[in-house]
Length: 312
Image (cartoon, rainbow, N blue to C red):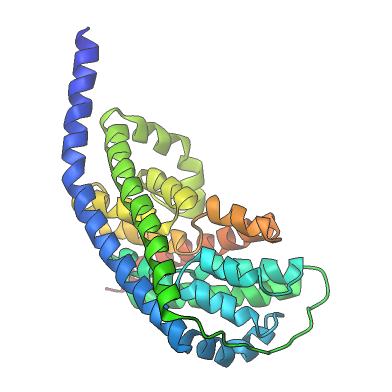
């Protein structure tokens, strides 16, 4: 009976302690998400997104994609994977092209919001943007050479669809309300879950279980839970949980930066990957290509830090 009472008391205390931090993180995430998404609505209405896509179309020819694919990439780059898929489904792309484009989108989607949360956890915003953008095109070039099949016919016809600002804003309001509700709910649940797992020693068990995986990727064992969150639920939620850990002193800036270099490329390997498979992408190319890049990014950073310490 005493054990049950102790368990309840500890659970209540942990939940009570988790709420203020979760609320603070939620407000910050909502503020960033809402403001950025609203800006994108006006860029879409004014045709700026279409103009950027048209400008980039020759670059997409070098990765074996038609010019129209640039619009899906740019939409995903500034918004999210869902938006990229919405555009992708309007294009006539074969499995090979869908796979290449999907890998590029997974590497660099929602760049502004996700870079903001990674900067808050201690990583350089410029470095994150450069790594994610550069990796997307490097992987596009490599996959264009590795994936068997013929390069799809390259065209560059763009049709700017003039949409009503009223319709765009209504769609934005509904989508944002759903996203904010989901985001706040998940941040609170993850914050409480992480504290409970830490309180009752489960995180130590997870870290021990995943130690070989973490060691392979060059990541500290203590980042195992955050790694799971980012890989299953996404970089935003992983970083939001990391903010909590950093503010509590549970994770150092150096460890957070190492993890950020991994999850900036390899994250959302559940929902987003399943959605892209549904539109025709090949799963192993989506996962393996980004895991390999993440592996090299973390070990390169470790080498960089080691050299700096030796020299200075």
